[in-house]
Amino acid sequence: MNGLSNKELYLSIVIPLFNEENNVSALMNELEANIQPLRVSFEIILVDDGSTDGTWAKIKRFSEVNLNVKGIRLARNFGHQHALLAGLSHARGQAIISMDGDLQHPPSLIGHLVEQHQRGNLVVNTCRNDKEVTSFFKRKTSSSFYRIFTTLTDVHMEAGLSDFRLVDRVVLNYLLEMKDVDLFLRGAVEWLGFPSVTVPYDARKRLSGVSKYSLSRMIKFARGSIISFTTKPLVIGVWVGIVVSILAFFEIIYTLMQVLLGNTVPGWASIVGIMSFLFSILFILLGIIGVYLARIHRALQNRPSFAVMEITGKREGKV
Image 1 (cartoon, rainbow, N blue to C red):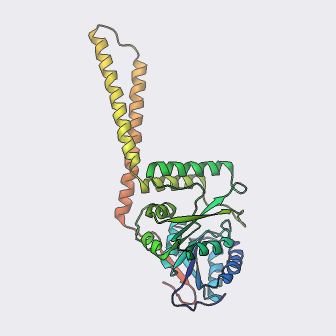
Image 2 (cartoon, rainbow, N blue to C red):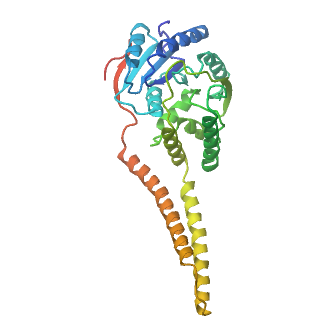
């Protein structure tokens, strides 16, 4: 790869990696083959998100022989979104592309993203067609999440959006100012509201390894993303409480009328059932409030989103 010669760097490519030792070499080869024809100044930022295999050794090797490559090693596994944020915070380009390192995001699309940016688009999203490489269950849960997110947050998101996108420096500066506890960069980009275009692509199979997103991690990620962008669950909880209270009030009126009329009030089992239902609603509402309080607690702690242990590259050293 050519060295960085321009004072004003045009393109930064940020790639978080977690236990992707077997993918790094193929990834770098494809990046080089697709970036060189663009004839732009560029840098590649590889972020090791606390890998336990030889990922960092591979990153370090490439950064030592290529001026274009910078390696960032986090102190531990902070998660995909935090690792991506770490890379974005070190990006120096005017146009910044984020993508995954498993080659499901095809480097061959980089030229199309750059072309759209040079036409004046500040945000260039991608929309994946993953029918051939993703299970039916994952596709359906993903599309359901986007529908729920759009409904609850009023931030419109199309199914198939991912963190494979290009943003202009102007957009990135706003992203870096956001201090969300639960990072959801896809939602943040859409929330900012800059006009965008979308480039479709066919997702490829992982070159090697397995997805790091288990079902429990996806549920946690979805919950945190929604909570981060809306307070509607609290509003819904208030209305549920009002409706249930009204129903309980009418139940009390009915019971008192039966007593005044001298009728025996039957159905102790049903009364206990109703009380159990009301208490279950109450605990659900308390749980929702607890989630928001926990988020406030984490925000007040003001902990850093990531911790960098080492930076490698011709222009960098250890921290």
